[in-house]
Length: 183
Image 1 (tube, rainbow, N blue to C red):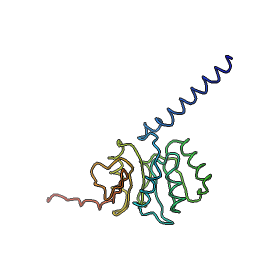
Image 2: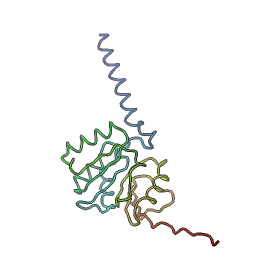
Image 3: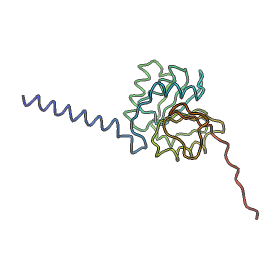
Image 4: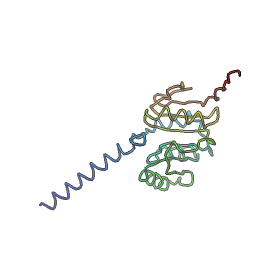
């Protein structure tokens, strides 16, 4: 009887620890776990105008749900950035299980360290705390006219070009001209 109680206690502890990890472990990096719905992914794919052989980046890709959706449904190359090694491993395994590992790449990297200079389509569902820094990064690194979709949270200084519910499309503006004072 005591052995069964010990097993149950350990199982409950392990479950509680996993739940804490699942939902709160990403907070130090700027985003906890909040799954993206199919409706949000479909809206994002449409707003990003994804077509076969495009490349889309998913910053903070978590368990890879968006990567796999974009690869399976739109036949695009999907590159994810995920700092958490367990989430990255699950995303790689899931891509293989869904038969899209040739189209999906997951980098174990902080999303702020991903080089976006060659990207024209970016997706993310992150914490509102990251939106200002991400807006600055996108504006600095991505070419004018590039498309960026954010789920739920908005950039503080840019107006969405279009929104579908809580899915917001931004078009990267041209950099502002630097004015120099006369000498």
